[in-house]
Amino acid sequence: MNFNGATNKVVLERYLKLQQPKDKVQCMYVWIDGSGEHLRAKSRTVDFVPKTPKELPIWNFDGSSTGQADGCNSDVYLYPVALYRDPFRLGDNKLVLCETYKYNKKPTETNHRMACNELMERVKDQKPWFGIEQEYTLLDQDQHPFGWPKNGFPGPQGPYYCGVGANRVYGRDIVEAHYRTCLYSGVNISGTNAEVMPAQWEFQVGPCEGIEMGDDLWMARFLIHRVAEEFGVVVSMDPKPMQGDWNGAGAHTNFSTLKMREENGLTEIEKAIDKLSRHHIRHIKAYDPNEGKDNERRLTGLHETSSIHDFSAGVANRGCSIRIPRGCAEERKGYLEDRRPSSNCDPYQVTGVMVKTCCLDE
Image 1: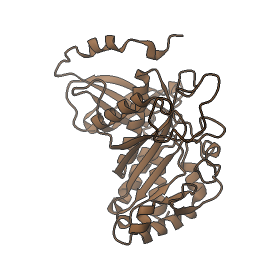
Image 2 (image 1 turned 180 degrees about the vertical axis):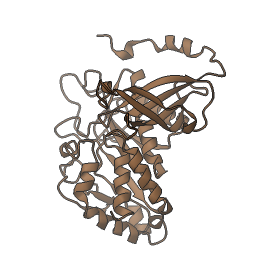
Image 3 (image 1 turned 90 degrees about the horizontal axis):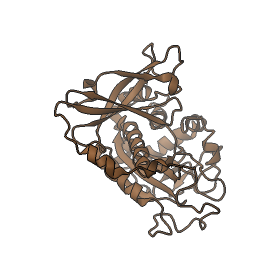
């Protein structure tokens, strides 16, 4: 089988070094498809260097091929909403995150950004900050975990978390390449680490205020898929990629408002936790693209998770729905961590429902 990673990347370098006309810029439009968790992209040339997304033209694509339209009425519109430097083509070239709209100019079913942005505008005086810890798993193209024995399993969990060494860590070069592309592009990446299950990793994005959390996380996801493509490796956001005694993958979401970050903000954190406790089911439905069905495999009460059926909270407890970090409890201010969102969640839905519950009391 001719795997994608078998192509010679050195050959490509010869062509990427060709001089690009100064009045031509390549823009790769990136959007969320009809699955609500996968990304698509295509490129166009513009004859100026865009400074803001609004300068770029609205474009369209065949929605019948992405699960977003019927074949008899297939055009879906791409509205540029966020601009990033392109770490692959370099120069003035750009990555363009887009919202998707139907023929009638209404948002597609998987365009949750518009509603999220409206919520963030309503609470902007409360200065909502977010940080999301995105876990993911590296797979071979045959869907087998990267670096795992083909006819068996690696040793039990324990040595792999934040591990060092060829017998404990698989795929670090992919992680390092992704980290640098995020920094170059303008994504607010704040760290990475190897996770508990071998071939599983995490990167953190944030702190981001308001709508930027969703924008930066989606672009960071695009970048990890795109970087892994160069290595012939697949990135899975499945919340429970391996059954059995292996950790699942989440998108732990850290959240605070200005009042939580100020002196005695712990009181505000406790108020938010009380509100969250009264809307557990609503949050579970918003925390994965299949309204909780994906998370059912992960939120079992085992492997550092809470039960999907019960709400819980505690200080430094990774088996709770909501964790208050030890340092925040001691300083009596800071943030809370919602450990329920799945690795394949839509960050617009996660952050939107968070401010809806905690900031708007809706």
